[in-house]
Amino acid sequence: MSLSVNIVSPAGVLFRGSAEHVSLMTVEGSMGLYPAHEPILSVLRACNVHVVQEDGDVIDVPIGGGYVSFDEDLVTIAADPSPGSDASVEGFAAPSGG
Image (cartoon, rainbow, N blue to C red):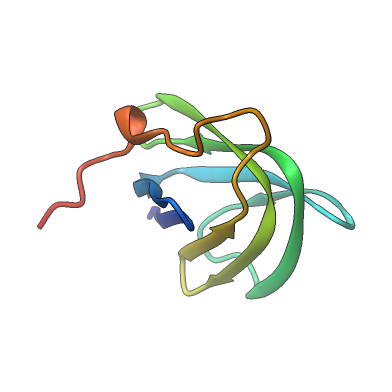
């Protein structure tokens, strides 16, 4: 079982793909999202969203805050651009698959 992950910002898609799990920082503290996790909606702090893909590759996506929604193994992050970054990690984005 895997997660479907979408991280978007006003600049566009930062990451789209499958993951084994995702770690991030909410205003309440750090959180790990795994398949079958309880649904959540939370405010995010500026952090690196840590995406561990099914093949073991790890991608860190810097964000400047935002919101995370999780339900039925779908992680959706609406991110503010990270200060000092170009707000794009397109080179790391997984293919959308169609």
